[in-house]
Length: 387
Image (cartoon, rainbow, N blue to C red; front, side, top):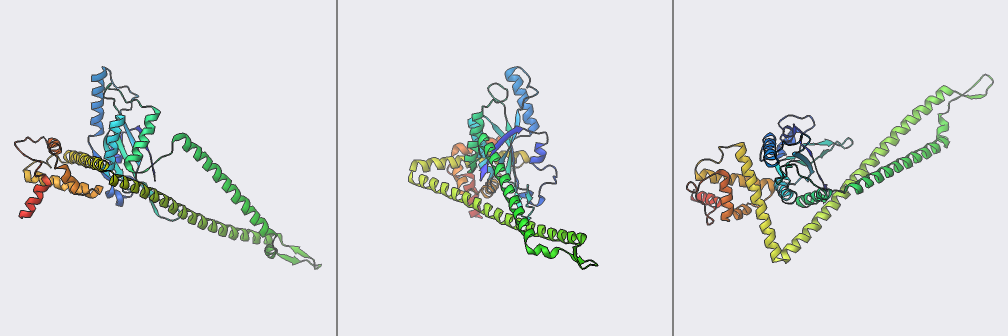
């Protein structure tokens, strides 16, 4: 399955659409609960900061035609997680200075197939980005190779195939249109041949209505004959159309199954290669583990920040209450992102990670004192054992 990412200027109603703050007639409300959302800051607040920073850094106001906040629609898979998109965001910031501050995963958009009436989902994610260059205060300037790299990063982070590059894609689109027209021409030519064959056969002679005149000569009744031919052509066209639809439907199903089979084979092959590489190389295993745990920690921190933004009072209270709330957030992330719960225990074994997480809530050391010997998750388990 191919993916792509394309940034454009964010619209004023992006948040309303992305976070489903309004009702839209083109979405399936019964699937909206499957959507996922994350936000670091409101779009309007970020824009004010960008404008203020630009004035402070460059001494000038942000240009009217500047696009300091941009939005990308990313093609994703059904099992793409918020963690995957946080990983993508991190890579975009590290390599292209693009800072993502809002993410929305949409699984309630798509369409019903006209022929099969089957629901065809349009899985995608919206990424809202801060496009400001922190060195100059102006908007980031990227070259064409940066945008190509953007596609590479996206495909790599989401475990999907990269979309076709511009010129090649346009060429293939043109070739496809030519092939389609050639196919239509051949079908039309075949239809004409069949009609000619049918017209020359004896079957059509039966449609001719004749009657004898007063001298006994057989004459064709033009009006009745034409009426018979018209009815015959209508029935013929209906049957031809029906056969064509059935053939197209079967071909379509076969093509879809073949494409899915190809995608699965590629995915299995890539997983086998990665597995064999990790197993055969101790250093690779260690680095993969570190990378994964860092990814889990990054997802946890971003989720905690988002939960705190939604409910400022959530992480306030006793140490036991805080541990329970963090534990609940870890469970939620584990379920939504298919992360083993043991990975969070690994995160809390690191004292630096604990300090980083505690700092999110502005807690002082006197109020809560964590240590690497006993993590919040372990304390939660210990309490449960006592009960």
